Image 1 (cartoon, rainbow, N blue to C red):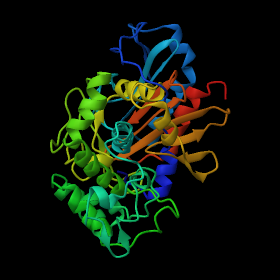
Image 2 (image 1 turned 180 degrees about the vertical axis):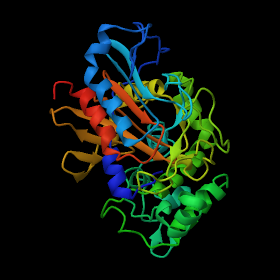
Image 3 (image 1 turned 30 degrees about the vertical axis):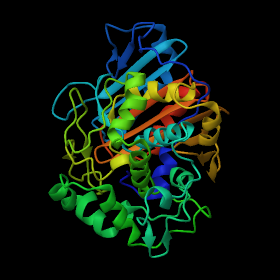
Length: 402
């Protein structure tokens, strides 16, 4: 789920996953004390060598405050252990700095979870990635040139289905995504079928497999397919196959709950206004049913880094299926999209895999190297910054020498 136009935002938000064989996930116990710095300098708990190793990242996070965001944070884990930094405030009007355990809405980073759950079902023989949407959701995708008989599960996950993105519907944007419409209706509940119906009122962008267009509709359908193939609710399947095995204790699939568990970052938005002086609203509470399987998850920076690292190191998906997740569609130079993940080639020559998230009140990005040995997450508790500025933070983290 994004607040900005499809390709601009998603290309800027680019990043996330890979992996290899399979091993049991051990509980996450930092091997060294957690290094923490802030705009004011290192905390008493944490002036370690790790802090100086991540100095460029720390400065890049501090620079994010120039966007007007109330707060920003970054977390990384590598061979030297975990590291965390933050600047600004977790809630306007307070002096509480963003903390390592603060939860936030991760937006489209949710798509990594959804794609992983689908691929797990494929690896178990419960479905095939080249099954048609019609096989699993008969009669649902039809009309206005849309045809579920011609669209595969794989094409949903890599955004080559051509299906219209329901968040680009002008009426929905007016009534639920921006300005007074959002404020008035932000607690409205939607079913996946309702948002899919909105999308199907529009013709497709292109024929299946003949182009690429980021579409949240693809993941609304993927969520329903997870339920059909697993026999469980979307939330239950994500918990059983990802959250619980990895012990992501601060990660939740909220369903219809409108708030965030504590502690959390308050989320702030200008609701589509671009002027620096535009009014800022606290939008922490909202219905997560509109983003659904494409954007509803709530998590923390350490949980996201743990998730992507374990996806990369083979804990979650067998190698042959990770290879399929890493089979990408080229988008622009240095950027391509696989099954629920972006591949991004950095200026220093390294490649990272990940995904970004943009939802009312929050911007975030999580990524890791191909072997999962180095993972990082950056997040803002606002949604109006240029998402490419988060790319810049990760550039500093993964390419500290430039």
